[in-house]
Length: 207
Image 1: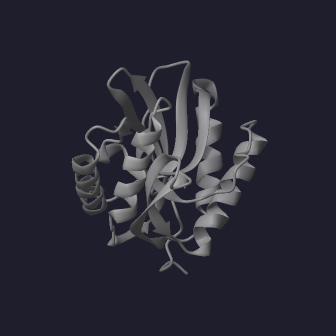
Image 2: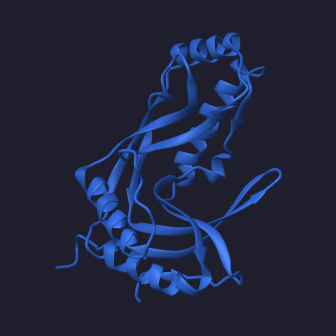
């Protein structure tokens, strides 16, 4: 299929997700943001994400059978073909669930309706394959770090203060032209991500 690429890895079952990957320019801006926060939060129990691993998750699949990978990629191609390329605006800093009790530190995304339509379509396609729908509403973001479960109240205050005082402006625009199926291998020093398949969105210039 034109515009789509496939890599085969030998494994019966693997963890995977569908995502939008970032440009080197956006990754650089995120790396600088993480560096600035790390300088303020050296003593805080936060697991920072490697900038090269930051992506916009569209659908987390969990365990995927290698035998079903072909069917999965065909569904991904079918959904991608229904949407045209679009742009995301990256910037702003926030946390989940609240500033007083932050668990996830993220950079925000402004997106057109096309992204929500893609997410809804992917959820539908994956539900037909037996993957449970995400119970929470889709909230596009780029995760920078995750706060430890063992955080103390004074550490919460330190993190909240740093986030409140940090200003992250516009980091850049990202043109989205494909959806990626990515394999996740968990290692002691962090996850290793491997792109297994890329499904191209439709080209607006093609009539």
